[in-house]
Length: 69
Image (cartoon, rainbow, N blue to C red; front, side, top):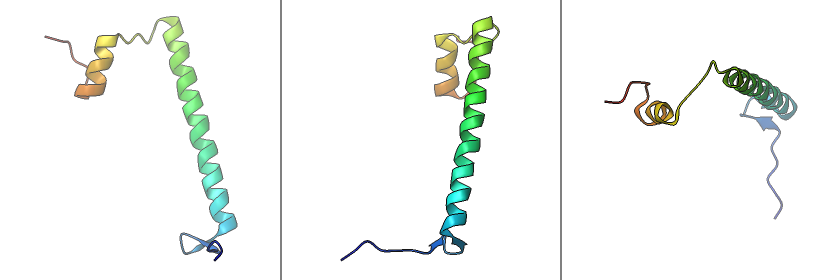
């Protein structure tokens, strides 16, 4: 018994077109992520974007930045 073969992507698009869509989406998301991380590191290096460990805790676990009581 061999592997099943398909000729459509998501039941309506050819495999070639589906591969191109997934590939380009991956490239675009990677470029946006690299740009965002580079900007964050640049601002952090200049001292503009300073996030303390306590404020990071509030952002992650409480969903908002607030001063601790």
